[in-house]
Image (tube, each protein chain N blue to C red):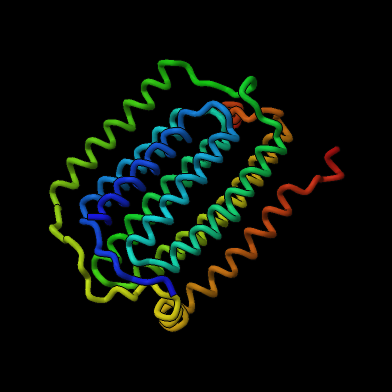
Length: 168
Length: 107
């Protein structure tokens, strides 16, 4: 019973946060509501017995990615007045498209309803020792490749944003 | 160690929740003209998919789904770094955050 109440509270908070990300005018408020949504998703991970995933999610998303967003927003000096807005027709079409997508996906999901009500016996799969064994045993090659991806992303970001003295 | 005592919620509830979050992300991509908001909505969609994969992994008692969520997080972090670098570059050249200022790229 308590699990259902926590789930409903977290779900309402995440959906409201996501809606405020879309409909809030001020970009700083968008970033803050997105951080709220990410925290509630971390709560969902804990509910799913994925504790290490929840911690990594908080560190990576709320700690690194959203700080990057906040830096960029502050650097660009955005505010409500120079925020570009679409026309009302385009906004209406956007909401209509998303709503139709939602309805069709929900209708489609009725086709493969699983009556999987939980109570899985193996509930320590989300702990770090178990995940580390799998990650460094079976998935060690993708792990190393992802380090190459990070190095190239880091170098790419630095090279892209560096001011080119020959252009000025 | 965090104690593990909770029962799992029904899979269909996660399916509905993740579909709603993904659709809100799609609405946001179509709704906003500020390109930072568009990237944030893409992050929202990635998170919805991650949550769905994690819920399926938990319900099937399989830890490899959680490894897949890790790799999606890795790619999302790299994507955000490159995307924001490009956005800073575009802002420096055009002086606006309007995504429709990029329509001059066409032919």
